[in-house]
Structure formats: C-alpha cells, structure tokens
Length: 186
Image 1 (cartoon, rainbow, N blue to C red):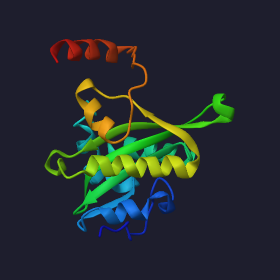
Image 2 (image 1 turned 30 degrees about the vertical axis):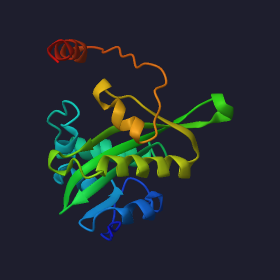
Image 3 (image 1 turned 180 degrees about the vertical axis):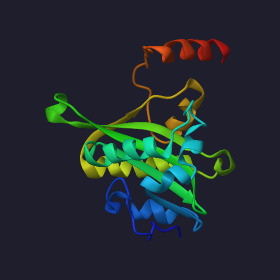
C-alpha cells in the first residue's frame, strides 16, 4: 500500500485532493503527492524531458514560477507527482479552465503526463490519469480533455478517453522555427 507524503509540505495544493484509494493502489515504494517547491532538485524537470524540450531552468526561476502558481494561480494548477526513493518517477497536471459556457462550467485540461523511462510499464500513467480525474471531479469540473500524439491515442482510449476533435497549434517566435524543424525530423 503506497502512502501520501508525510513530510512537512509546501505542496502546490491541499493534500485532501490526492485520492487515498489511488494512492493506496500504488506499490508501497511509490508516493502520490502534490508538486513541491523542492522538486526542482528531485528530478521533476528531467521527467518532463520525456515529453519535450524543457530548457535550463535555474532554481531561482523555478521558485518564481512555482510561487506564482501557488498564489496567483491557486485553484487553477494541480500538478501531481509520483515519488520513488525521493525522486520524481512520474508527473501529470490538471489545469482548471473557467468557462462561460456550460453554465459557468469548469474544464480540466490534462497536461504534461510523463513517466520516467525506468518506471514505465507499471501502470503509473493510468494511476496518474485517475488521480488527475479525481482532482478534476473534486474541484467541480464537468469534463477532462487532453491533447496527445497519435501514437498515444490507444493508451488514453484504454483509460476511458474518447477522440473528440483535432488539435491545432500555432507556434510563435523562436519556438515556431524549432517546432517546424522538429516536426519535419520526426
């Protein structure tokens, strides 16, 4: 039975939004918890490199972004981490979008789901998606949506997601040229 963290916490959101059922379904060596300010040193950014270019982010820049999310972005950013031996083994986010449609509804945008290579194949991605769905339900979202690469559609379908539309992107500035080059190569 995995546990939720017992360390004094500077977590991004309250621990009551971590599903005890999902946390307990993990192997005992894994901890399901909120992102912490200290995760700059715990491999969080390295885990995200599985998805895309992260860049060189100083601890000061990390702290500034984290503090903004924890204060000005409170109630919007929910970043979940699976910890293994004091290192980030996986992460995923739900960003709550406040809408005017659907009677001022809330939509959970699932983002940046990543499992470190040496922890893949252990259903951690599925558990993270379940944890993010739990948060979305707890904060009142009427649906969760996500974008993914075509090769990941099967995984998300097995987790209960359905295709609904098509993603479009417009890259701006330096990022535009980098993305066009990367897409031509892959």
